[in-house]
Every structure is written in C-alpha cells, then in structure tokens.
Length: 210
Ligand code: DC
Image 1 (cartoon, rainbow, N blue to C red):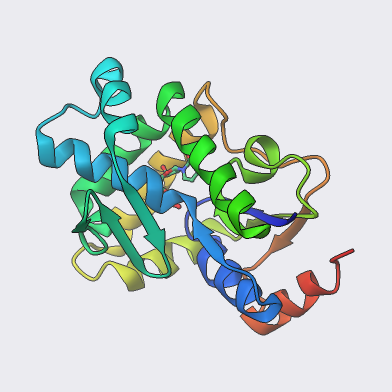
Image 2 (cartoon, rainbow, N blue to C red):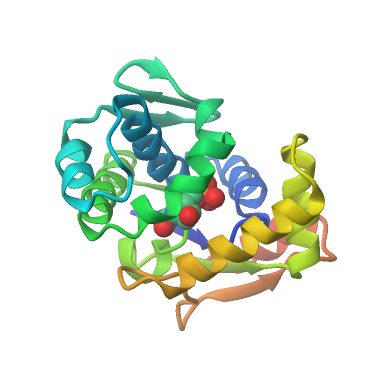
C-alpha cells in the first residue's frame, strides 16, 4: 500500500500540495480535515453541542460521510460549502480534540486507503498516528503572516486581523490538545512553503519517493 502523509497547520499549503501531488502520482486524495468539519456540521445541524463529548461520540458512528474531491456529503446532504463557513470553523477544534471522534475517523481513513491500496492523505496526525508506516511523510509549514494571508483570500468576509487571530487560536488548540496533537513525525520531510511555488514543492516531494 502506497500512502503519502501530508501534515501541517492551517494555511501551510497542505490541500494545494496534496491535491497536486496526488494528481502527479495518479493517486487519490483525502482531506481528513473535511471529515472533522463534516462531523461538526452534522452536530450543529442536529442541535448537538460540539463541546458535549458524550453526545458527539454517540453521533459520529451514525453518520454517513462521503469525502471526495471538493465535495463533502453528510447523510446524503451536500455540506461542501457549509463546512468551510465560520460556524463550523469556530467549533471544529473542540470536536477534533474528542478522542472518540478521532478513533472513529481514523478507522474510516485507514479503510479509505486500504480499499484503494494507498493514496495521499492530508491532516494533522496522518504521519504520526493514522499511517506511521507511510512511504513518504511530509510536514508543511509557512510563516504565520503568509498562512494568514492565504486564509484571508479564501474567506472574504473577515479581516486579515480576524483571520490571523483565528489561526493562532486554532494552532494553539491543535498543538495543545491531549489526543493526537499536531506535531512533526521524526521521519517527516519538513518543507517551509512560504517562498516556494507549488510546482517546485511537488517536484521536490516526488523526487523523495522511494
Ligand atoms: O485542515 P482543516 O482546517 O480543514 O482542519 C479542521 C480541523 O480539524 C482543525 O482544527 C484540525 C483538525 N484536524 C485534525 O485534528 N486532524 C486531522 N487529521 C485533520 C484535521
């Protein structure tokens, strides 16, 4: 099984790089952050408090999640737009800190890759927890102001300052949580994407494949 793990904080360029690398290698791509967002979306929609660990843990196994390309469906409802909205973005960190949510989604991520004999998976814990035996582990970073500028371009209704503050808040939550915190795997290739083009990064990573 040929699994490529791409981890890093929000705005580090994970999605762009993971998509392009998958295309380049003829593999499928999975955005695992979209799965945590989809669970959060389902909770909000059903009036379940994202911070209620027991209620969320009961909800997750019941959900039918379909993540493919740019489309995310939860119980057959297209949630592709809403999962990127401010409500979900605000609440997703607490859902992602829930160990029982993580256990369920990690199982689904492993099944996704096994059924395809590999793929490019992007997230926070892919190289450390989900696929510690991945053939290639990548940890992307970028300077905080670059990451905030990238995110501001995607969310036009928030100021740069608001986006930068939200990124700092989410970094602290993702890095500080007890369950699978965001951290670099010892054997990951670390790339600072601040001043590199996507083509250069993809070429560099493809060249590191065994
Ligand atoms: O990459 P993103 O911003 O769409 O991720 C949404 C949230 O999910 C973010 O708070 C980190 C969390 N996440 C995680 O804990 N583990 C993953 N494998 C992917 C995302």
